Amino acid sequence: MTHVHKFADGDCVVLRHKGDVIGMTTPLSIQTRTSTRLGNIDHKNIIGKKIRDVVVSSKGKELRVHPPTLDEYIVMGPRLVTPIYPADANLITSLLDLHPDSGSFDCTSDAIPPVEILEAGTGHGSLTLHLARAIHAANVGIPSAINHTKVPRGLWQYARSLAAGSFSSLFATRTPALYADQSFEATPRAIIHSVDLSSKHSQHAAKVVGGFRRGMYMRNVNFDVGNVSEWIKQQMHARGPRPFLSHVLLDLPSSHAHVETAESALRVDGKLLVFNPSITQINTMIQCIRTKRLPLQLERVIEVGPAMTGGRIWDVRCVIPRAVAREVDRDITFARQTDTDQSIKDGKQASHPEAGGEETQNQRGLEIVCRPKVGERLRGGGFIALWSKNRTCKDSRLC
Image (tube, rainbow, N blue to C red; front, side, top):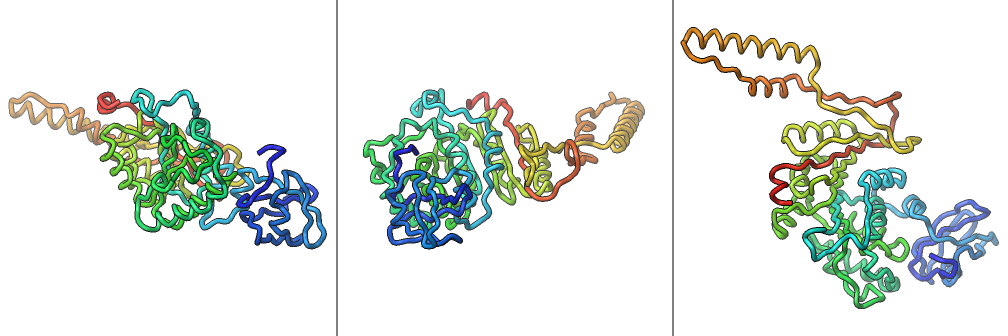
């Protein structure tokens, strides 16, 4: 957006009166109007205006027109489900520590694979849009000039394909007609795979992403509909056993049911991020990872919510209480002594079940520590848990 930009059909516009935000229009259409407390504004009076020009409402009030910021677009836009609000979406994006560079990726080379991020649980599309913006620099080779007059038609074509069946890919309907430059690069250097069970939510999220700044981030996202574990298995079957995901984000009520499949497709040092409204869901995830012995290292658990800038770190870990540990040690000592006495009586060499005792101590009396690092508990918000994948012998062979 520059000072010479003119608003056109399909743009969303923020209306301000003396510095106060009055509202945001629906996508501009010459036959539509927006109603506000200061009067109605016909869209035909906005189309063709430049940024910060003045339009007059039906009540004679002067309103300045602005393109919406990403925060304003998320907060004031229509929704089917509650979005991940900008402060939390920015925090989640920063935890992935993304540094896209158009010169760092070669889609035809196995040495430097493209960045592929899986978002399971598309929802509103707020986090999808923030992630798409974060990786945008990697795709500068793909034309950014989109023929915005054809974007709505393309989005509805995509929406119909989603409703027709599961795992309908955006690339299947992303035709050159959507782009002003007919010779566009089809293979992205960085891509967000956004998967949701609901085709209705996926369609709405596609419209959210496509409606911001004339769809400038649309090329960075591939929407799919279906079960995320099945999607990963299909991708692994088509691509081979090599992990292909740079990072995985699970915004699902039962994230633990998909963690094993997600880990199998996650590259070494890739981030697994889980966003849940309850700390008990995070506890379930931690116990699941420990039980399945997955090579994932818990880095941090953060509480997010109102008036919690940057979130608050929680101490969540598996421990064995000291009293239980002492009891387990006594049982192990007694078992060893009994085994030694019986072996001497039978004339056999005594066996010391160090491995068995170690397993007993690891599994018996295990409890979860779950408390804020500092301060007292606050209500509302949600919890973010972040893991990194460790290298294993299997990964050394594949990577």
